[in-house]
Image (cartoon, rainbow over all chains, first blue to last red; front, side):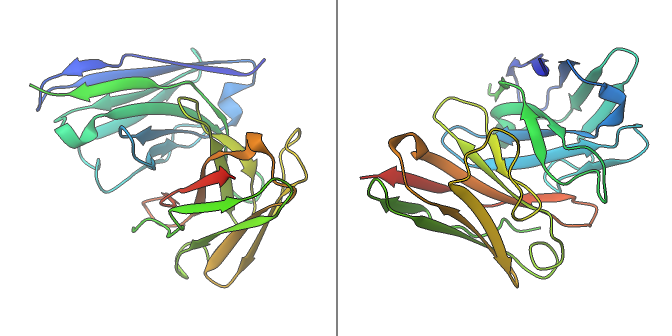
Length: 123
Length: 111
């Protein structure tokens, strides 16, 4: 069974840092691009960041560019999101998600999602 | 990159068909055939129901169908059922450094 399990969420003060991790199982992790999507309380889905299967290419939403860093370890089947300079507006559930297989495009759609981890930024 | 525009809510009676629109620009929806749709029930993770404009993942009901015309994509739910209640989001690949954009979301209510 394909699974994604996020960890690392919690309460952090404004300006602080947090590192989210996502452990993948049930598929050949190194073959797929991965991403993070967040959802603020009562709000819609918001794409945060994505990374190519090799890790060679990374992409970020304008709202997190320069503050968040996505990375992956294909030997450990994990993808991480390092979040610095956190703001109140970063408060959200953060979902780790797997992309469909690469065909004409490696970033077509997220077919598998984790259950999410809650990040709360507050003093 | 601005969010794609969806109606805030759509409703229908059991058995009816409803359509949710998703309007973007030529830089996203209109420029690529990589529109996808997600269903989300309260407190749950999103579920992929349509990808590549009109393809369904294995296990997704054929009551869900997608299409696109110009800068607007659409999701149609036929034979509406109570279990279809929830929030629906469209997304599109953008080909830019901000790779991906979500729609504003639509709440579907079965009357």
